[in-house]
Amino acid sequence: MSAIQQQDPQIFDALEAEKKRQMEGIEMIPSENYVSAAVLEANGSIFTNKYAEGYPGRRYYGGNQNTDIIEEVARTRAKELFRAEHANVQPLSGSPMNQAVYFAFLKPGDTVLGMDLSHGGHLTHGHPVSHMGKLYNFVRYKTHPENEGKIDFDELMRVAKEAKPKIVLCGYTSYPRDYDYRDFKKIADEVGAITMADIAHIGGLVAANEMRNPFDYGFDIVTTTTHKPLRGPRGGMIMCKKQYAE
Image (cartoon, rainbow, N blue to C red):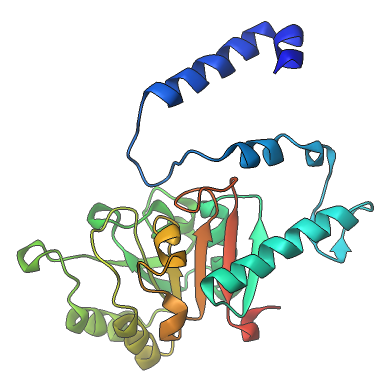
């Protein structure tokens, strides 16, 4: 950090103050984590100088042979870790990750069945304040506090038959249960919808086999971030069946 200290003392002081804040405080929210020294080194590496739009072997700029190695390693590890047939790993975050799935499978006005934010869902799952909530028709399901906060899948089946969604989406930011992926798959199959699971806030637990893996229940698409429970650098991953790879 000596170079920053010499060149920009004001920024250096802010960096040091943030390090002190993180070391002395704690924030128990699922969207943050403390990365290892190796991750910090990678984030501050020579790759900050490189443009790398596109995919391995199909870049828009030259000189990406080493970038391709790293991205292929990330994709291979993601497939092995989550038992996925295909993986796309990008240095983005959860919101554009989910948006990419919507853009790939939906047309403006198409319907998505997603969890209500007030019941544990996520802004990108159709909340009206989000841009995706304005572009697509999100039908939001809720939990039932009178039934231990569970989801009524009979009611969800009725709603799905009425709404005819193109995507049945499950995933949450704050919901104290594992998901019943088999029930979601049954509903999606009944209405001819694609199954999508956003596991960004539980990805580490899924990878460690402490929580269920959606792919084990036949899900089509699984998205997760790399920086939350997985404790990696900031990024987003879209994993799917091979038939959706291109």
